[in-house]
Length: 392
Image 1: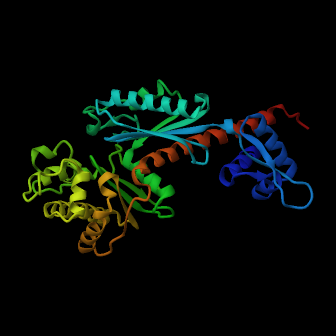
Image 2 (image 1 turned 180 degrees about the vertical axis):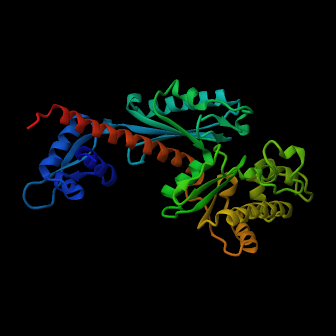
Image 3 (image 1 turned 45 degrees about the vertical axis):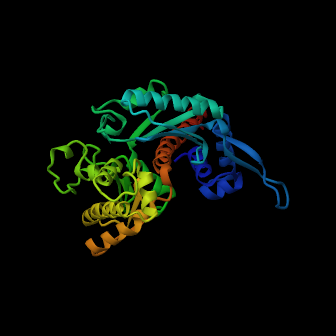
């Protein structure tokens, strides 16, 4: 690792540092660190941020990442909402926007994401030339070899499509796609309940159902990117029913539309069955009997799914997320079912990041790409210097 790379890595990890602090951290001489900082300043990667005061003698100058070193973009494509965010190189939010999704197919939704990203950049006065990476959380399955996205029924896309090309036409930067629940798991791993937890599962329940699996710190994608598609668990009265072949038995039964279908089949509503999941949970909170029965059945289905995952993976932690899964009215019921079905149940929690778990996970993926790019630039600075230095 070259001196420029070591210095930049230290500033990325630790924030503003003086030259003596950097020298102590990386084990290099102060003159070597000073030379490296000069090269990084010339490359617009590092800048002086002012003097440190409070100590005797001369106040040392602190250095930090340069404002024009760059930033990253993240997008989360949900069945109900699109969310986009710009983050600085330490993952702090610069700006974000949310708009309802118009589920008119993959090409149309990609155009919505592009428009929303342009609105984000304009509103925050961000220079597009400083974008280092874009990461996108998407529904469906992302092929690990081609990045083609399939099974995106909740945005009106029935066939596999090339989402990445639709985005890079407008944003020609390194672009990474991952499944939205994998991204949510990544977000929870970096910023939520799963920090420091080596093996865990994130189960998202909303318009659809999916799971992100993290084993020994790494997200598992599977041979074709379909690891975690637990919507296809055969948890239904008749898992072989033809109507389950498209979306899966568990998803048909336990997703938002499935819950509303179950509510419509029940009698005893004060007026009429609820028209939304939010209304269903509100009625359950008020003690309305058929609503309580639907919530209880939902907890049973999710508890069976969690117990099945535990029998295969034996995770330390399972996090419930999504518009339905994160509802605290479900948590106690799911815990009870898991405890009854599995002898050594894991810790079970509702997501700490709420509806933004996938967005933050996408941002962290983009940050990984951006940091590698910055460190490569620092290495290039050192290599260019070595090429021009005279041989003794």
